[in-house]
Amino acid sequence: MGNDQVERTAVVTGAASPRGIGRATARLLAERGWSIGILDIDERGGQALAEEITNAFNVKTFAVSADVSDEEQVRAAIDELEAALPPLAGLANIAGVSSPVPYLELTSEEWHRVININLNGVHYVCRRVAESMVKHGFGRIVSVSSISAQRGGGTYSKTPYSVAKSGVIGLTRALARELGAYGITVNAVAPGPIDTDIMGGPLTPERRAEMIDELLVDRVGVPGDVASSIAFLMSDEAGYISGQTLNVDGGLYMH
Image (cartoon, rainbow, N blue to C red; front, side, top):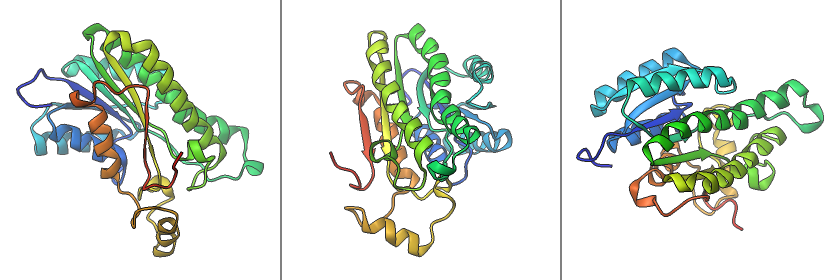
């Protein structure tokens, strides 16, 4: 999106993590001319990123704090973003948590925590932002699933994470059908091994080597690999793509 076009805001959830996909995505979208609405449970981190982006890219940026698993908090936060920024035209659903707990050791509390954040949270944010997009007749929604949704785990997180991320793909397809008539495209990206803290912290050389052995490329992914895919799916050039899941996984999973 060029600066000569109508101002649009991209809402990015989970952007405050210093080594995360959300931060890379927010910065890349700002570089491409989007105004940025940051929604993150980390209030201080979100505000610091908003200031950083404003200074670096001279775009309108506003940060709000919310727990995406709480629908009331989500709606109130997005109300704030809508009041403070240009029309909400893009959404990158990136907030999420990992869960390496083996299934036979899984508690109900852990199951609900992971499902509530990784799936219900995506639904709550989509539902509220879609209301704004429908009013303007345009929207780009991209949600982060995972290669774990297709492989049943196998990277770091296990069953509840895989189930939630599978649900994100189903939600993406359903919303693409329902919202297309309003000028809204809905897609997902499914990252493979990406060197972020959601993988349990920085990768050791040994663990990195083990991951690379499974890949078709000779490196583990970085946040920018996923951010660039999200930015493309949110661009005008991707207007004929909807209901799709793009694997960004170094060839780890092939149909």
